[in-house]
Length: 179
Ligand SMILES: [Zn+2]
Image (cartoon, rainbow, N blue to C red; front, side, top):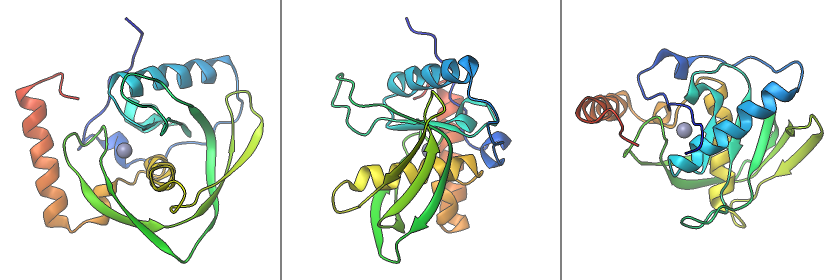
């Protein structure tokens, strides 16, 4: 059994908070990232941001290439920043480990350029393209939103948003181990 974090669910205040810049990329951060990745795989997610495990630093993990039980290509991002976005938009039905069993079509820029550091502190850029990889394009923007205290349900009407939060609260009440 791998060591995993507990995934925080709405309406936890930590999900609405801005995460802090990581000043030094050290062994502790690398450990946090690998534990976040194990948590993400255990929860069958494709992305996880630090806020979702109750940590307010700018770290996220993604793997949009996994297939079933097979692990794919994990991406670790530290201090990710969107430095360019397209006018063109794309739509994808998003879900979130912090908002279990709730889904909605979300519209975002169809292409973004993201600057980030990897787990060793090396600088990288990722250019997404919805036509080539719709999931990656939405996932990276969804996870960066988390670091800014923003959830996909914040793009919906308040009526729809409140309904989803209530449903999650009910689910959590019924089963403490809900995914
Ligand atoms: Zn999420």
